[in-house]
Image (cartoon, rainbow, N blue to C red; front, side, top):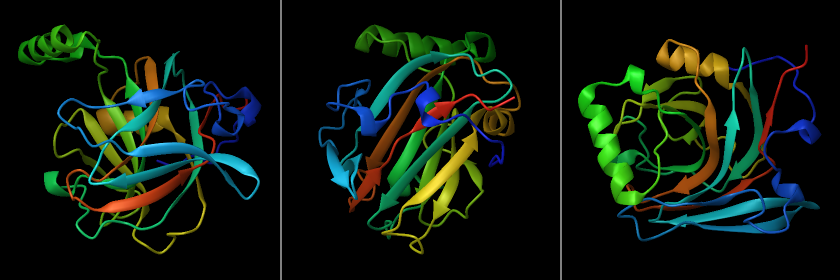
Amino acid sequence: MATTAQADSKDDSLIKGFSAMTSLEDGWEPLEFPKIDRHSQYQLVDESGEQVVKATTDNSASGLIARVSVEPGDSLILRWRWKVSNVYEQGNAREKDGDDYPARIYVAFRFEPEEAGFFERAKRKAVEVMFGEELPGNALNYIWANQLPVGDMVANPFTDTTMMIAVNSGSANTGNWVTVERDIVADYRDAFGRPPPELVGVAIMSDSDNTGESATAWYGDVQLVRPRD
């Protein structure tokens, strides 16, 4: 669900804003995936006097991630602004071959082994041994969807540990900056039916590897802040 709670200023953000970065590695790092060789391109650019990240995707997928260690508490606000050039004609959040978005915010949480079955734990351990990195657990994806109506939440077609939430949809606002604010604690409860564990990462991603289409997106500061008392 969206939140109307007031949050502190971006100066109190728990992750570094793009407007304050000196390079793409300044507080963020590349997020790439096994078996995907074509990566989306990210660069710092000036947009109307403010430094933002420009993402270009063409039959590709990758992201930028800020790794964190944050206990969410009762409320934790994620706020950002973004702009996209277009949505995908074949984009469909309910289908594997349509699981692409010109812009998305990926929020990853610590894996909870006590909530997973034996086979899930064994599969994860095998992947960790192969790639040498502990995998996150459940995730929320805030997406600029093509067909999914704003406010709808569906399981990712590849895994039910990731829930997709449409915060923008369709082409009505393409080419315009849009500001979004969410309470990720409330959204996690709605998605998974329990309070969230530790937050371990926030990423931006523009991808088009399933549809084979292309798009450009611009991301302003992504802010992670505690709400005011």
